Length: 444
Ligand code: EPZ
Image (cartoon, rainbow, N blue to C red; front, side):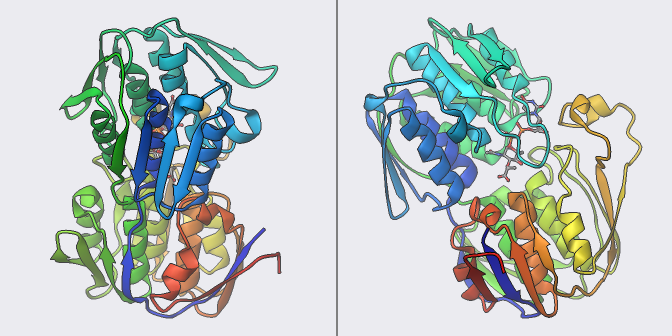
């Protein structure tokens, strides 16, 4: 296990560039299976999840190559349609190869996608849609695999009962080579989905978002290669903005996309956070006056994104007053609370009364386990002090890193591999902003 050692209490100042979006890169790789032509994807973040997803493609016999921040993929060498369990179970997004494999080869076998630590994360909404498109799907508990078969997928009208970001993407990938037209209703409108659509259209697919939550796909017989540059990662930008204001610093973010951050910038301003437009793709983040407490409810896009609530909680530990965060997308997304408490944060769990939880929450209510809570109350401002902390999910990891930057003293963060899943060279990039942060290869 790797450890980060952080000497906190230093305001971050300087410039940092946002890397390409992890949550588009992984799906763009799966999309490359849809053609035998060479596909080139640019602005790829060099993070663990990217290498994991390339391992999934390699396990199918696909040739991949990575130079600097661009990935080349050629699927003509594909020789099998089963994703091995040791590779597939590491990354939930491995399940997205199913649509392309069915569309091109009529079969696919994938391990039940590894739930992260943030909840069960089943793929029932994906399965339901694929079945409506003609796929025969069986689950084999004896080996933990889904077996899928389809002589030829056909178009269908599919209405998602609840929002699903990758479920929407899975069905788009299945529909682009299917027979006829597919209409996805109540489809996700996360900005990552639209970047993926742009990529597929550049490969010759006919995909169009005709309403905020409705996407129409007209199946074509073939797709061709393309060269595509990924949008910047909005989770990175929010992480850097909050690192700036929580440490009392002043940071200029390059490759900024303010249009992707609507719900964030609105509540950021309520908290006294200021974002200054330097140019189209450059934004300066700094705190104006004391940090004000806020009340957040996470929602699918265009709401306040669930990935943002963990670093936001850290920011609120420094706010004057009581803040609340109500997590409605995942059933267990507060693993960072125990670690922030070790550093002196005062955070309580509570469960807001909800009329009809099954329809209110984005997760399947039946997935909840004993002891889960959907909301936290954060009492601020609380000075944070150093601690030895563990992390077990990507966004919680980034939050604990920010907390260590805010805290007085020297903190040790074990399990930094989780941060590496979503943030490239995190310590070098924060060092450039003045952070005193080093990585130790082994347990201290
Ligand atoms: C994607 O996860 C992102 N991951 C998540 O980012 C992000 O938090 C989430 O969308 C919301 O925007 C990738 O794109 C790789 P969902 P996804 O399908 O697709 C439940 C990060 O840190 N559900 O919208 O898994 C599900 O369990 C990650 O980068 C079902 O029950 O999210 C969840 O509680 C974390 N059945 C809720 O719905 C299904 O068939 C939303 O899931 C599908 C989903």
